[in-house]
Length: 143
Image 1 (cartoon, one colour):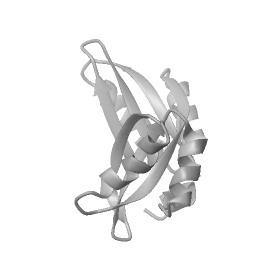
Image 2 (image 1 turned 60 degrees about the vertical axis):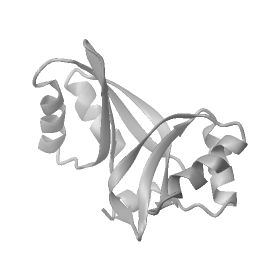
Image 3 (image 1 turned 135 degrees about the vertical axis):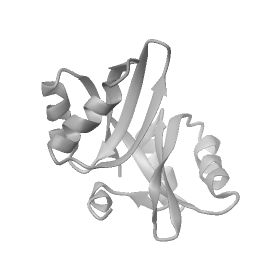
Image 4 (image 1 turned 90 degrees about the horizontal axis):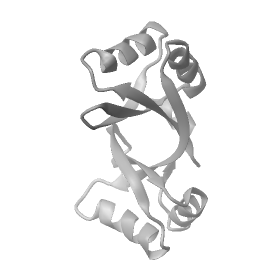
């Protein structure tokens, strides 16, 4: 099961990140998780929210460039080697991890990591086959 992630292009200037957060807050949209990658001139804010369609509209109406990508969130054993076991499933099939980041909350006793793979459907099928818990968009409503 894939979930949708918003990517927002931001100029690397003071106040740009807070303006995105303020716009979403004013619309009552809570951030489930996010990551920010930057260069000297711009950044890409990747975020997951409960209602991505509404968040996309709010941000686009605010003049931001927003793209939507499918990502996979998985429950990973929160112990040494937990991530390594997930990566071995993916890498043995020749799938590349484009990027990843973590949620700040757990699912049961597992850490939750978000992945973008170069072969999303194949990765989901392999992970399910291996018994890895795939996080659904409905789970986001519970946090």
